[in-house]
Length: 177
Image (cartoon, rainbow, N blue to C red; front, top):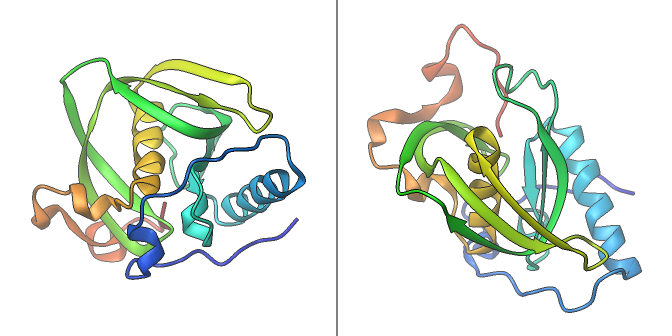
């Protein structure tokens, strides 16, 4: 439908807890999800949360196929996840680089659970219940954090591993998450 402007860190809406979706299968929800998908695809993103385009609802989308921004990442199926709940399946954390469309031009080393279960709904209200690991788990945690008003820099434990992409990775032409 439309490519939307992505809000940048500092916008107060990005720090709010998003509201739960109460009605599924509506034209408004379908339009929101299509706009999110158009926006994510246009920016080669791995995921996008509704608050990032100015809509304070608990809706995230994610999915990764072969992507120049994530050349070593395993594929993640395209998913619309509404009103998600995340349950870690391990206490094990792994640090890896993350970026964000709302924090353009920067990357940071972020600890995330290596294995988790997520539960929620698709846009028609059907239940989604998956247990995942690796990059899939990282993407879900990153996107769901947006629904809680958390941006990835808030999870960084060592700010020596946070900076501008072109400084951290001068040999790569990597865009932001």
